[in-house]
Image (tube, rainbow, N blue to C red; front, side, top):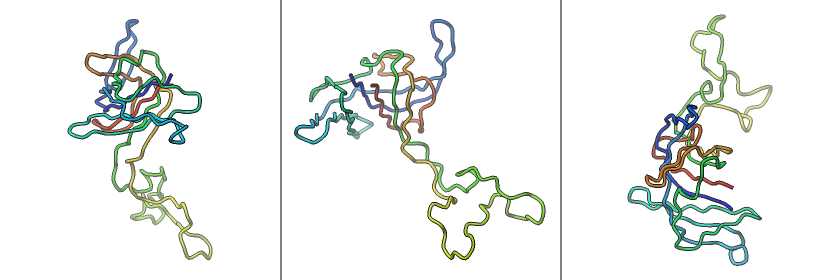
Length: 189
């Protein structure tokens, strides 16, 4: 059965297991979400569950597609909260990464830049040559400086460490992409 929920990333912290092990976790305020619509392959051409999550004064609506063979017991009007998850569940988490603005090639693509000596006065962090031969245009796909971050990132095989249904909290092992307050889509298959 597929389990899914929407939430917001809060912070990173440490969680001490009953065995005394320290685990780095990301705290996610998840749900409750309300099932808005059920899409069925016979009528709509694909299987999916649409849910709504209140974030501040706005309601975010997201769709969770079901793969062939996946089942969901959700019905229109149902409310889903964090209690559907259990410690040890494997998760797939999608969110938007932090925007970093315009960045040069050294930070954006890991270029090494030029040497500090041998006549290199002010070109330590420059990209170097971009053309070649007789071409008078820039080749497609050339790595250059530009906007960095703000991409949709999906992380797989994250694990639930602790579930707090009273406070709608989910502790996920490891780091989740994004700033605090970022909308997070969580799916367990």
